[in-house]
Length: 168
View (cartoon, rainbow, N blue to C red):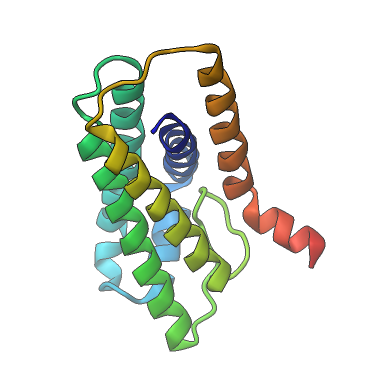
């Protein structure tokens, strides 16, 4: 629960804040996907940013203050990742070349690796959800290792496009 929560907090904070810095660019990416009417893209961008930041803050609160919101935070995280996966799959199946603005900046065009990333993040959220009703874990020296491992995973997720391009 702490591992998955840490990883998801960092991923959703980085994603939400990155998009918040460039909301027009993110809305343009949504528009380019052609999943919604073009006029709905700015509102969809705001809702996605709000959802990501809400998930991150609820997870953070659940891990540090009160475990009550954890079930909802992990469920929201899983739902966001599944919806993102379905959107990316739709874009790929249409044959469109849309750049991922997942972390507020343009990166590689959507590909299967983006779907895999989101499915793995959804699985991480589901794993956290399954452990969320056990209550907050006690903080031990092992907790620091778990947090560090979750942070390391989140950095790999955030830098996935850069790493893939580097080794391609």
